[in-house]
Every structure is written in structure tokens, then in C-alpha cells.
Image (cartoon, rainbow, N blue to C red; front, side, top):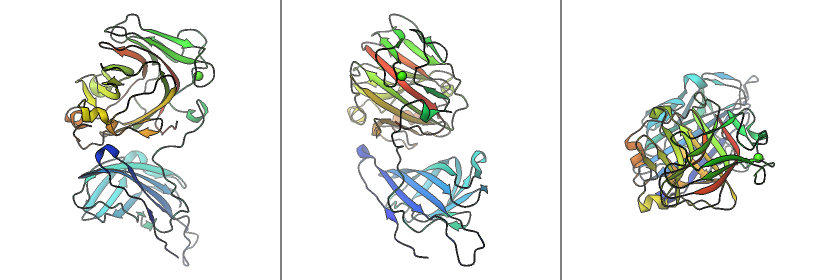
Amino acid sequence: MAMTSLRVRRHRLPLWALVLTVVAVALPAIATSRAQGAATGCTVTYTTNEWSGGFTAQIRVTNLGAALNGWRLEWTYGGDQQVTSAWNAQVTQSGGAVTAVNAAHNAVLAAGGSVDFGLQGTWRTADPAPTAFVLNGVPCGGTAPPTPTPTATPTPTATAPAECAGAAICSDFEDQTGTVPSGAWQTTAPDCQGTGKVSVDTSVAYSGTRSLRINGGAGYCNHAFAASTRDLSSVGPVVYVRMRVRHTTALPTNHVTFVSMPDASQGGRALRVGGQNGALQWNRESDDATLPEQSPAGVALSTPLPTGRWLCLRYQIDTTAQSMRTWVDDQEVAGLHVDGVPTQDVDGQWLARGTPPRPTGLRLGWESYGTGDDTLWFDDVALGSSPIGC
Ligand code: CA
């Protein structure tokens, strides 16, 4: 059995340029000379974000052998990495040897099936990514694939609804028949109501001929949202969201919100996506914590939003660990990344308080607290327990 070198790509960059390190190990169906039809194998993608002193890793295991009821993935760190926590698996470490065992909810790994889990850890002098893995005693390691196959960002796909069929929310608004939201979307103003207006627009759309339009007014209180009627309490453990948004006006200096998710971890108060100091941000209603921190360095780690065209906003929220990621047009926004380890200017303030979010609903609209108005549109909105590409 020829073992060729592994394909390993690594970069180390400052925090403002967190990059993905992807290691792929694949071994399709090894047949040994004495195996009796026991051809097995596995593929592991190990994707890390690293910074000085810390890292997170997202690990996907694909089972190329027979179905497993209970799985155990082992590897050895070549550096001084120390795992400090994990999600969707129980991870233990002895010296450099690491063992990840399934969680109760993902014990069954079908033939050809995949499972994802993640971990976070610390390192001091070196943190090379592992290159060999063993699944239930069977090495995965070996032959590098012809091309690096894994990516952390799903490939852009066609527009809704086909690619999000089965997701908790999968809406292109084409089923809206009136001029105001109906059916799966209902107009709401959670706090107070003024001149803000929600409508179904038949002249501007990303897909088809209909979209959700918000005429958002400045000042408190002109809140206007369309709320999905879906209860999202059981979506997860990671909640994935994808939507198309079109702004008319750049994000203002003052704080505004255009996505609001009732959050059980805040007693129903909202986890919000919006803007402040001209850049995209997350805000937690219960304590007004922001992501990134609103220092100049923090704001610089986020991004303004384009106007006059559709953008693709994607984010994911882990409901079991402090982990959130955000993409605009498939570019990850470094400042909108909670990795569980407090980082100054990014998630230091966010992690100082609060617990992992548990979104229970989705509201799209506009909420301003001072100056800042906008006319904006939403289309092709999807939310579910699996990643949904742009
Ligand atoms: Ca549409």
C-alpha cells in the first residue's frame, strides 16, 4: 500500500486575517491482503482557525466503511496543542494523543455518512494540524486526494427554494399573494411601532418576482419586521442561516438592526444583526454587548455593506457552545467570529457575559435607536440545521 505525502496547507497570519487551514486525509476503500470484504476507510477534514495562543478546529468525519453505531476518532498533535473544550463530541487528551467519541445524538454514522464536531484549544510554541486519523481502530490516513477537496465555505448554489427544501425556513416569497406578508410571515413590531413599513414587493426581487421590502424609519420607535411563523426552538445544534439582502443606504454610525432573533438564552430578548459605526455587527439586546467590540480596531475587523445590489449574508450559531461565524458574499468577516476564547476587539466583551444563544424565531426588518433609516429588501431566506450556501 503506497503511502504518499499528505497535502497540507498552512498559513499563520495576524488576527485580522484569520485564515482557514485545511488538512485533508482521504483513503477510499483500502483492501488489505487478509481482509475478507472488510474494505473500510474514512475521510477526515480538519479545518482550523488559529491565532497566537489559541485555535478552534472543525472536524468532519466521513465513514467510507460499514455503518457504525458509536464512533471514536483518534489523532496525535505534533505541537503543544491542548484541547480545552469541544462540541458535538466528547474529546479527551493524554499528552499529544487525542480521542473524540460521539455525543449521544450523533452516535450513528451511516456508511457514506458524515459527522461534524468541533473543539477549541490553546498552544504556545507550535500547533501543526494533525495529518493522520484513526476511526474505530481503522486508520484513515494515507493517500492525498488529487485535489484538496474540503472547503469551509459551501459552494454557491442555485437560488431558493430548491436548495433549502426541508429546512425550517426556506422562503423566496414567491408564494406571497398580497401586498403585506401573510402565511409563513407576519408583520410585527416587537417593541413599538411608527412609520416603519413592511410589504411584499413585486418590482424588486433576487429570485422570481417577489421579495420582502422594509421601509425603515430613523429614530426610536419605527420598528417594522416580518416574523417567520416557525418556532425554531428545535433547530440545531448549530443554526445555519442564509439570506439575500439589498440595502439602499449604507449602514449608519448609530446602532441599527435588520435581523432580530428572539433568544431563549436571553429570556426571549433578541440576538440582533445590524450595524454600528458604519460596519456590520452583532448585538445582544439583554446587555448590549456587541461583536466586534466597537473600538476602532474592532470596527475595522468588520465590514460596511454594499448598497444598491443584493448581497448574500450567511451566519451560523452554535447553540451548545460559544461559537458564531458570519459571511458576506462568502467572505468570512473576522470581527464577527465568536470562537470561545476571548479576543480583544473581537469577542472579548461578548464572552465576558452571556451563554450560547438559543434562537427561537427569525424577524427581518428594521429597528433604529437614533438616526439611521433605510429601504431594504430580503429574498431567498433559509434557516436550518445544515449549512446552506449562497
Ligand atoms: Ca423572490
